[in-house]
Amino acid sequence: DRSTVTISANAGMARLLAGTTKGASGAVTQNGGTIEVGTTTGSGDVTTLGSAGGYGYYRMNNGTLKTGQLFLGGSTSGNNDGVFDLFGGTLNICVADGDLIIGFGYGNGQLNLFGGTLLNTNGNEIALGW
Image (cartoon, rainbow, N blue to C red; front, side):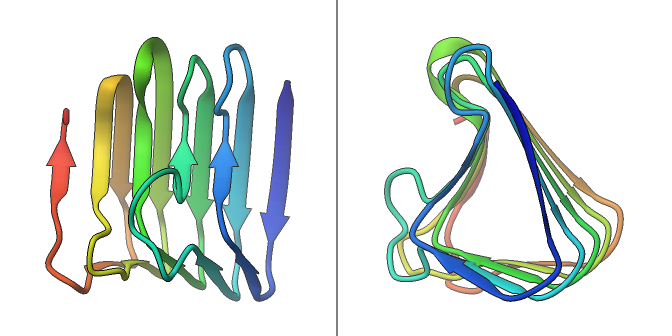
């Protein structure tokens, strides 16, 4: 039910899901490198933290995260929590139809910007309580 991963090198994947089922929690810590997640699509679950009754957390200390879309806490069922703490590095929502959604449906989302850079390079939505 609980898992963690620490990334300090380059990585690429189609999707990144943390805490996306009832009672589950997942945490990602990025200390460096470039992580590319679904950089050719902006719809659906590309990078999702906390949905369907789960808790997801991402701590970015350094490096770059490029993703097609980022959901923080959300689904059509309750008790979903997603938190993203940006301490350093660059978070880039990089696809033309990709959005940053903080708190979707019955979810609770939180984005904390302590340092680093947040980019939404294609001018898409940053939605709160969507």
